[in-house]
Length: 61
Image (cartoon, rainbow, N blue to C red):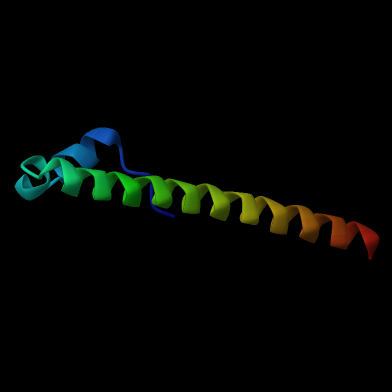
């Protein structure tokens, strides 16, 4: 399993084009980041639900 990237690693990986982007471009990029975070949280919640269901299913058997 891979480790999560640190904020420093993300910042170091930003291309110059992002650093020099317009406000409009950055707003679009921000929306992508926000949606990515929501997707990640949803994925984690789904994993917890599946684990909980699997555990309860085993106990019922």
